[in-house]
Amino acid sequence: MTDETKHIILQLGRKFLLLAAVLLVLDLVYRFTLYPKDRDQNCTLITYSRIPVEEDDDIIYLGESSNHSCSPDDQDQRAISEMIDDMMPGHKVGKLSKDACHAGVYYDMLRNIPRKSPVKTVIVTVNMRSFSSEWIYSDLEKPLQKEQIFMKKAPALYKRMLLAFKAYAHWSEDERQILVRQGFEDQTLKLPYYFPYHNAAEWDKAIGQQDHLYNGQKVSMDTIVLTCHYIKDFAYQLDDNNPRIKDLDKIVELCKRRGWKLVFHILADNMDQIKTLAGPDLEFLMKKNAQYIANRYQPQGVTIVNNQYMVRDHDFFEREFPTEHYNQHGRNIVAEAIVEAIQ
Image (cartoon, rainbow, N blue to C red; front, top):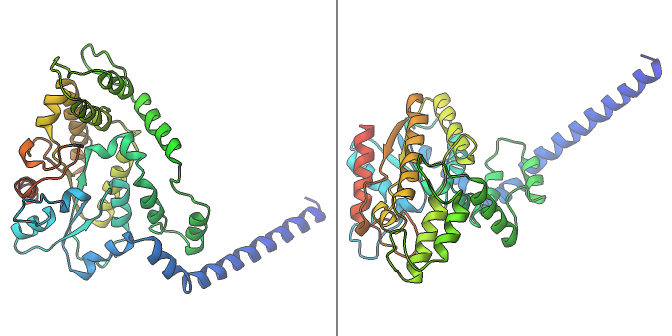
């Protein structure tokens, strides 16, 4: 190496160190001046991670709207997590519950819980709709991903840069619809018997052009629309490549490192209505997907609570769109099953 080359390398090294020092100073200045305001304005999730310490919770329940949604007719309006708390004297059950959350958001909440927290058990809601491209590319994902930037373990200035350059889901509605549709088409359906549709897109299109259900029963267009929603939400087959599975994997590893007992709670879906409208083919896929969760995580020491069939049709109070929103009787069934499993 010539002296000139050494001199150039030395000069570049000095400039790099100077740049690194400048960035470090800027990061420190930003962290102690504008960052707290930016974080509080753009990220409500970070406050959830402080709850277990502030409220001295040894069990935490992570969920979405299924936890706290109530029927207008409910006299008992307790959330599922509150019912669990009441059923477990001697323990304090806290909730980290926010609409539209999924495993990726739960992971960020969990890893930001202070290490001095009293948490011993973590109950993670597994909503089977969240694995479909309909939810993965939901319009609700944009604000969540924006908040998740501030949940990263990274320099404050770097997070502000990601926010400035919109390094989160900010697709247009047309772009989002293309992504959703592509997800339907990419997921090939493989059943152990003849099935006329290769994917959810074909199945959805075929049903949408009919005036009758799988069994020939003629129904209204509203019923056809609801049937198509079920197909789009649940006609998939889980594998290692699903981003929600990768999020659940990260939660398992995190809980192992933190010494937390982990419970995956598979939410109840309206299987009565699904069997009536979409038939045994969709039911088969849904059962296989729930079994995939159990087979993947039980050997890793995760407690699986499969409530998929536990809540009956009359306990679902929303009728025009697939949700996991139960009346007080349904929420109590779910809570009892979780308590039984963790005790």
